[in-house]
Image (cartoon, rainbow, N blue to C red; front, top):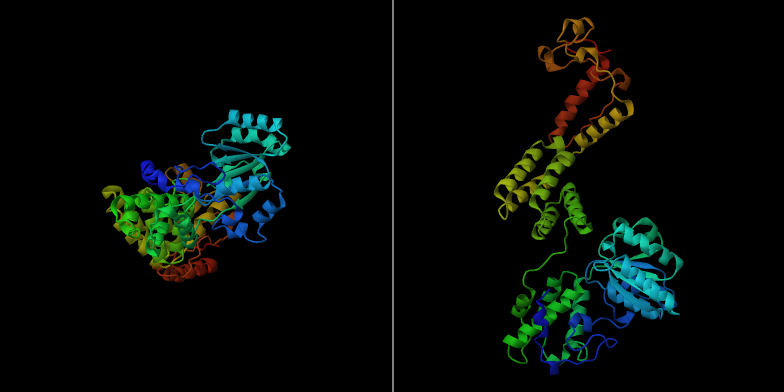
Length: 460
């Protein structure tokens, strides 16, 4: 966001004191002054607020159950909560879960009991409430003492406990796209009452697009950038000249990408990286890797995911994949960033373009399943070492044939415990180098099945 003082560079006489409901005065940030006063003013959530859509129908009916509004920053969660409460003619009690706890929730409940009117408890950043705090809220929601409107940027399935979640309807708000942000910016730039229309600064499509791009889906950030850019313009440009890209760039500074280290957006981008690699799409894979690096993700985390992918999804279709991924990990570990992006880029493109096989991954999982089902079955005697005479007398190592002494280095003896039969844990899929492996393995399995080979013992 732009610096706080950049929002106070406008002469007071150029701003009007009118606002949405008398709460946002002339010196309030533009985002607060432009907060929608009706559902029709809300931009970018047509799937919820269009004609006949679920949330609009709820609002128009005057019915307001407990809701959770889930969406990225700056998509309108708080605004929607206020508008929904107003449609229901409810008393609005806003709290931030960052600052509030059980004590503040109890105070709201006590006030709700004293008034003859529905009370809406709006809890911003709902995911910040711990389990005990959520539990303290539950009986009051269940009894209808308060109607909960929660707002969260995190997936409620992970962050809200099951009893509270079951008593709330969840509505998912979308990230604002470029068109929605552009409409929002134009509206604020032209509005002479709550916006910047009285400044008389022409704002062309190029500057609008630059602000929308820098805002990265966040309406609050878009309006903050517009206000800061106009402040820069008033300080540096001639009256009547259009808003320049230079002013926008000065206001925006370094763009901050939406990302986090351990919550949903983190997993979304990681998932997109792995699935793009698996789909053999190097362009998409590079993009998501770049997203993570640019947002400040630990490059060693990215490198570790590539090492895992090399074995899980490329495997023996190209055995070099694990070497490339491991080398990239070591390179990043030893040289750091920003140069570490180069070996990471090489590994990403190699893995995306490599033939794919998950046969090794499936094989170890099948073997683990067999171990868990059958337990510790006895190892066949011919595979056991016989370091003592007693063990040799018990048959340890008897009939073992050294494969290197047989033509083709194949022995048909059954090496698995008899109780397992002859399972095929490893099934090469025939891609890349694994095609030759599949051919050889098929021959060996046929020989073991028939018990015939050029040497060794009969495995029957």
